[in-house]
Amino acid sequence: MRPVGIFGGTFDPIHYGHLRTAFEMLQALRFEDVRFMPCGDPPHRGQTFASAAERLRMVEVAIFGQVGFSADDRELLRDGPSYTIDTLSSLRDELPDRSLGLILGMDAFLGLPGWHRWDEILDVAHIVVAHRPGWKAPDIGPLGDLITEFGTHRVDDLHTAVNGRIHIHAVTQLEISSTEIRDLVAAGRDPRFLMPDAVRDEIKKSGCYA
Ligand code: ATP
Image (cartoon, rainbow, N blue to C red; front, side, top):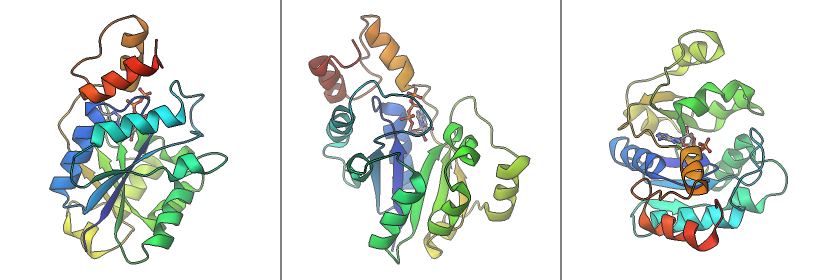
């Protein structure tokens, strides 16, 4: 059975950097599906700009019609901070025999040692790191050690074990960030071609970044 990819983020808003990364993972790593998981109360950052409902809605319209993409709202339904380890554990309870692959951009991966119970993540899932413009994989420190011990270049290793490996995967570099999009919209400029038109329409309709 092929791995299930989990792509968490604030998605404030979702953009082509996220979508292209998830799509390349789906195809190149032969994932069964990729589940987009907007986080409710992100523990590592302040308030989001768009509400949880708006961010989920933008994810839903962005992925509409793409086979293998789905939105998962479990972090939005849970009270308190959205800890990734809790999310992965709840997925593991549902899918005890499936390979799970947590998809992270390199910037998010570098912040991993600050996450709640981060050292338990590999007990539950694999970590798949997408190369992101301007960020380099660590070769020293706790993450460097982790890559030395658990890193693999072989996609098959993500299929044969259900958790426990780290795979760094180069994706097409699209230097787009949600911050840049919010700033553009707030400045009265059009974010067209940085995201699907359906997301742009939602932003216009809700006025969430104006
Ligand atoms: P912000 O600018 O608000 O910090 P962001 O664009 O980084 O947002 P997030 O929702 O915080 O988006 O990111 C969710 C996940 O997507 C993270 O793992 C992040 O590393 C990854 N990601 C974000 N933008 C890109 C991109 N352009 N290419 C590849 N991965 C990305």
